[in-house]
Image 1: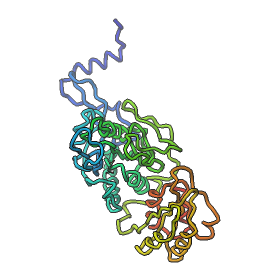
Image 2: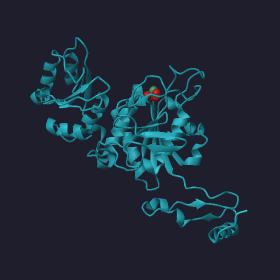
Image 3: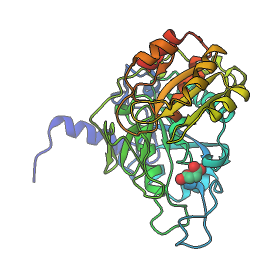
Image 4: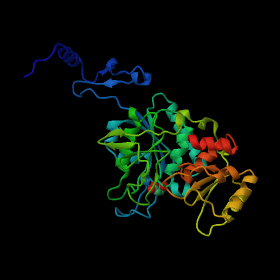
Length: 383
Ligand code: SIN
């Protein structure tokens, strides 16, 4: 048998002298760079070994398939999204309480593909900000439908000022389904939100064991559990065996360095921005309809490198003359839209590599600051 060192003997004596149930506040677990953590209590007694302190995670629930139910275990389409409460979601993940202290709040319970709104994004961003303002809160997880998750994620990425992890999670199969993906996705999201490595990485999407950046990741599949990716630029990393592994960091401005601040934004500040999708035999009808509906911005999802049909171009030129900001984007999922002479000639903004649905979010926020196409171009380059 190995002999005990003096240090171990002292530690053992201290432990055996303790009555069961006594709480020890251990200074050896404090972290001076994070005063909140210094207040954490480490519990121990002779029956329970010393427990690692758990992060405090707030789950904000908004609905989606992760909270959806079907009538049979084989129903994986045509089910109802947004049924379960956050507490019911947690019950399906027994190990969750061993990895974090969880509190929950239901912000909405909707199908994000049919019912998400700019007003809801504003409301959610304010709730996220409020939760993270609490010094006891270490991170936030948002359960969300996958259909518009990338838009909500990017809105939060641009408006919430916090270095603490903000993680969106959903599922592709309803909670009642065989091999439902929600419970493991939620478990991974909570691990990620509670991890120090996830700090200052911008808002993240945690699906199918991958960590995606709100800026780059988008929905790539209608039904598969592996539905979020940026096939070209990749993920930030993975979550495996209850641990996050980061390999990349977002290079565009986000959260703490963003010019947009949810504390100063209301739903009424946000102008209408429409997306017009280009196709063969396109014309200006949809552009004119957007202008007539009061759009202050139009994201043109053009063909190829943001090309605009010759019958649509006059509509966009007229829109600019009426003070509408036009962003030249693409319907192609990969590659970037490069700066072209048409941008100079027509005061168009080119989107870079941001997809039309995220460009809409960015332009809506930028329009709260400026209507000058040159300044708007700078925002599109930086964010
Ligand atoms: C939704 O977006 O709310 C429904 C679809 C999903 O969550 O996968």
